[in-house]
Length: 215
Image 1 (tube, helix red, strand yellow):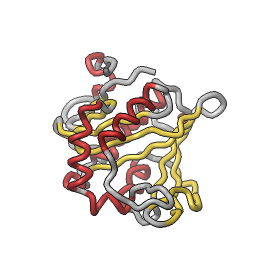
Image 2: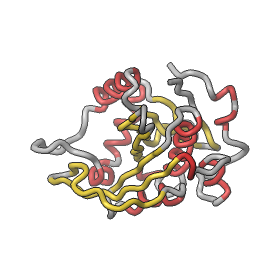
Image 3: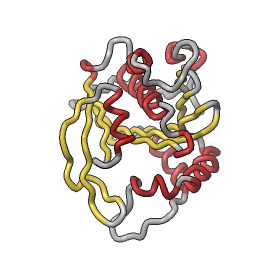
Image 4: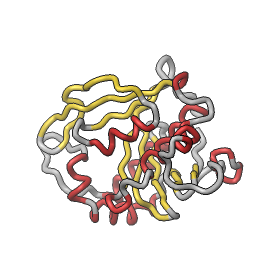
C-alpha cells in the first residue's frame, strides 16, 4: 500500500528512512531514563540500549513485506519520536495496533495525539482498517490520554501482554472501530476539541502535494 507524508500544522509523520537512525538514536539516548520504563524487552536478556541502526533497517524490510508500518514523528521539521503500526491482519479482521513515543523534551504539546490521529485517518480512509487498537501500561497516564482524546473505547486489561523490564506486564486495551470514527476524521475531531498540537491552516492529508509516495 502507498505511504505518504501526512501533516497537521507543525506535526508531520512519514515513513522511516535508513538515514533517520542517527536522529532517532540521539533522542532514544537523551531520553533513556524516561523511555526505558515503557520499552518492551526480551525475556531472559538484559535490558540495554538497542542497536537503532539495525532496528531501522529491520523496520524498512518489514514495511516492504507489508508486515508493519513505522513512521518518524516530526515537529517543526525535526524528528522527535516514532509511531508504528503492527499486528496488521487482513481478510476477515482488517485490524492493527499502534504504538508511539515522543521525546520527553517535547512531551505535553499534543504531538503524540496529533500523530496518532494522522495515522488513524490514513489507516481508516486509505487502508480500509476496521479496528485499531492501542495498549499501554496502566500507570502510563500520558500514553493513556492519547486514545482517550481520540475517542477510543476502553476494553479492559490484557494480562501478561508484553515483557517489560524483568517481567510480563499487564496492559490496558483501547480500540476504535471504523464506524465509530468521526466522519470528518480524527484530526478534525481532535482539533475541534483543542487537543491537537498548535496548528495553522488545514490538515494536508487532503493536499495532493503531501500524498506522494515516499522512497
